[in-house]
Amino acid sequence: LANWALLKTPHCSNALRSQLRRNFGRLYASQSKFDEALRQLADDVYYSSLMVGPEHIDTSGGYFQLGNVFYSMNKVENALAMYDKVVDIWYKCVTQLLSVDAAAYELPTLGDAKGAEGIEVLSHIRKRREECVGASNIATGESNYVLGLLYQYLGQPMKSAEHQRLALAIYENQLGPDHQSTKDVTLSLLQLEGGA
Image 1 (cartoon, rainbow, N blue to C red):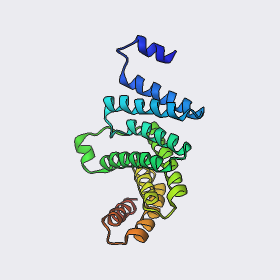
Image 2: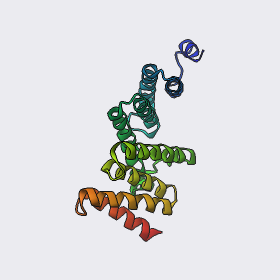
Image 3: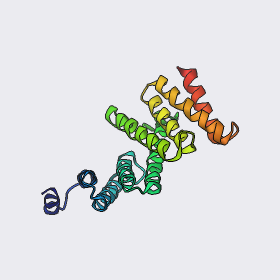
């Protein structure tokens, strides 16, 4: 019925089309109709991209759902690729919001609901990465770092520091203290602890 309503309403917004496709994708995934779920979720990403762009956190929800479907299909490499995309989008968003220029450019802020969604999604991805590539893998460290930055943005310095310390330990172990990524996490943690 929902599909029929969309067909009868050609001027329907891309936001509604995206949300409907995402809901159908999740429904089909829950019924183990994975091919149909992938098709619906790909349409979700398409309509969301038309609306806000492919690198927007609203679009990242579609990538996340695609990752979950691939994981359910035991296509772990594909799932991890989708999760990488989600983490990258959230990293860019949160670092931009935390930057000094954010106030100057009057960037839109994340609301409580979107922030909570980000925490849930990034925590899920971190758990999947731990299961698939290990707790000391760079990808797991990256998940911790982005989670820490999001907690920092949301005004939760204790949780932020906890995740950033986990990330720093992984980065130091895997990349060494002189790698730029390790230096970035160190600086972020020092700024957080200095401002707390």
